[in-house]
Length: 114
Image 1 (tube, one colour):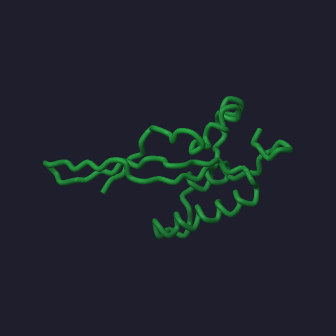
Image 2 (cartoon, one colour):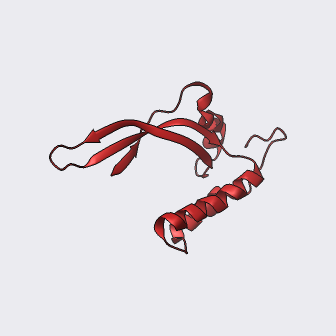
Image 3 (cartoon, helix red, strand yellow):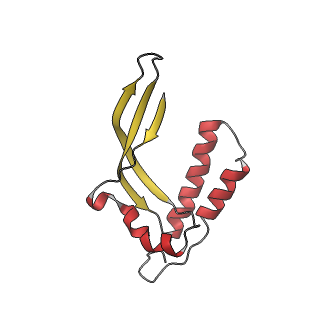
């Protein structure tokens, strides 16, 4: 079964990505770390092939800025990739993306990313 992601973000306080606006403008090449809660908003079944597609809805998304939380998430992301794929060594592209995403970031005194 295939899955796609709806392009719609949650309304109100469920959209933690809204905090990234300035950071994205100032450093558009930077990879950011976020955690999402998703569910299924739509199921489609192709009659001719029987294939089914699920469309995920983002219920909540939060940007992770705390350095300790980022280190824990880095380990979790690596472990889950290894479990899902059975690969003990990450592909170079993924390893580089993870390295860039989880580099220490400068934080303002209030803990918000610059």
